[in-house]
Amino acid sequence: MSPSRRDAAGLALRLALWLPLLLWAAWRWGWHYGQFFLPLYRAVLELALPGFGVVRFHIAHTHEFVFEAQVIAERMLVMEGRVLPSGFTIDVHTPMYLALTHPVILAAAALAWPGLTWRARLLRLALSLPFLFLLEALDVPLVLASSINDLLTYSLNPGADAASRLVDWVRVLDGGGRFALSLAAALAVAGVHDWIHQRRRASSA
Image 1 (cartoon, rainbow, N blue to C red):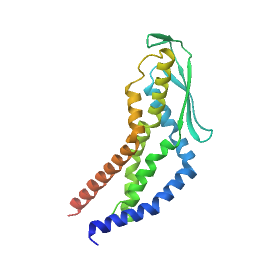
Image 2 (cartoon, rainbow, N blue to C red):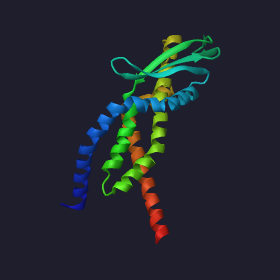
Image 3 (cartoon, rainbow, N blue to C red):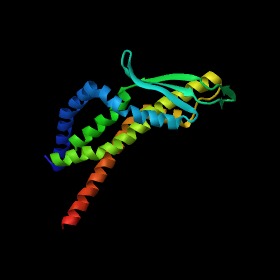
């Protein structure tokens, strides 16, 4: 078996071993993971919706766990040629499993990557954390902000085109962009890790 085939076989084996464990961990501790990121989601949602304040942001359970948010217009706003009164509230939600996609992919990449020692895999997991925070900031809160904009557009002017940058972004995410972003982040982590390794080798030479 050539080295490339051996690497591919090892990668497939490690994925087969780790993915079920990671998916089980996401199911078992996903609520705690979501709770940890709630402050980040809330902050990004407020930034994405100028003129609105977040009244409530929590995890609820219907037939599945969902992120549920309520926002309020903090002042009178003009949208779609209509006046939106101050105090107007909107409730939105999105499935919690969206947030769990990124840690599963990043962890799977670190644990299954060929040719790494256990110490190197742990370093990759640590290097993944800043990228994980960025991915979470770009996903759940912007999905909720897009839903709010969509609801407002339809309520104020049903005949208007609801397309916006936020709506387009969510379509990208839901069309496979969520997985692509996580994979791109995993490759970026690998690049940073390789750069650190090269620097260490150069300094020790």
